[in-house]
Length: 323
Ligand SMILES: [Zn+2]
Image (cartoon, rainbow, N blue to C red; front, top):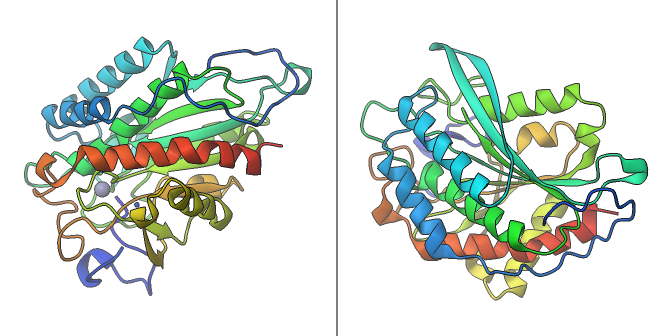
């Protein structure tokens, strides 16, 4: 993952001490951007179990058998919520040779646009691969935590009445660099591929009104970045939402740019935000991409805070971006 921040080209991992986280009613032509409150609340015990489950699969780098099993399990979960899951397979050309990767996505369909055209969409994303490292790396935080929250968000939104927009739950393969260091273009294979596919379909990019990316949201001592590479207007919605739900301390005050799966969307003009905590460890970010990224350093409460933040922010996001 985002092994460095674009700060004077310095690899933050090496040098910076403390841095740097409804069911279908198609056919209606009028849109009501007011989102109704979910019928069921975010259940962090379910999300926590999703985190534990992924860790049980073991290290899950792209192209590995444990990642295949993880993917099948995500499909099974989403299907049980009534979603139809699409598998988006492709071969990534990496510095380690070609690797077959596969994103997953499922759409909770909202109203159609004028004349029955596809209606507006909000994308909620997380990567689910773990970095391939020369030791046992189970990625409880990176990226089991965000994957877990996204699965639970899908369940909650599926149980909410009348979605005002279509929600796409998007699980990226290949976010992590294949090489040890994060050097473009060796990273974010899944998000880049998905955006390239969207570009092939007329109107698919324009349809997406906002993209919300989750990554490393399980840290016991959670402090999401005030990410400078995110669309600032969208980031401000999340900052003010945190405040309004009484969780002001959820975001760090510092503003840093983070490289992550939201950026391919921003490059297409889609407002996008990255919810990520890159202060994973007591001193700096020392648990990140190490054998210390374990269940013990994550908490159910952190998943709860992020799940609730996203659900509280969605009506405001719709109000701002879905006209
Ligand atoms: Zn990572």
